[in-house]
Length: 113
Image (cartoon, rainbow, N blue to C red; front, side, top):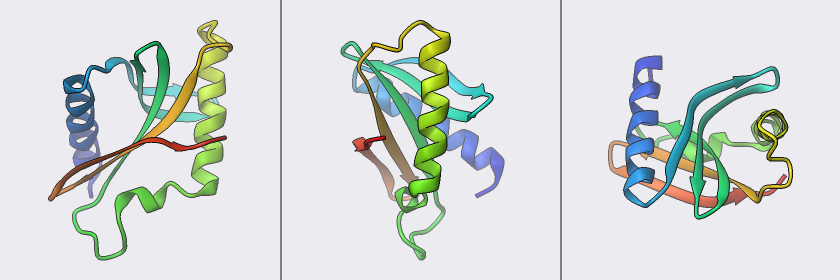
């Protein structure tokens, strides 16, 4: 997908999450450690959301792209975000939202650092 499609996927994911009661705190938040697609709050928990989009599932679902290396980068970026905002002790988790032409799949608590 092109970068514009990625932005559209992030917008779709944010709308989807808001419809399920999440509050979006940040979009495309950049840290020295990397970028966080979405930072949200879900019932008192800080949620770092990685949005992955694919135009087809020929090479597996989009969530397969969140491999160990990507998880490590997301963890570092999340630690930076939490420290900068004085939230180091706040409960937090990592979700993945997969966007395809068929729809959206939300994997809550997709991985643990």
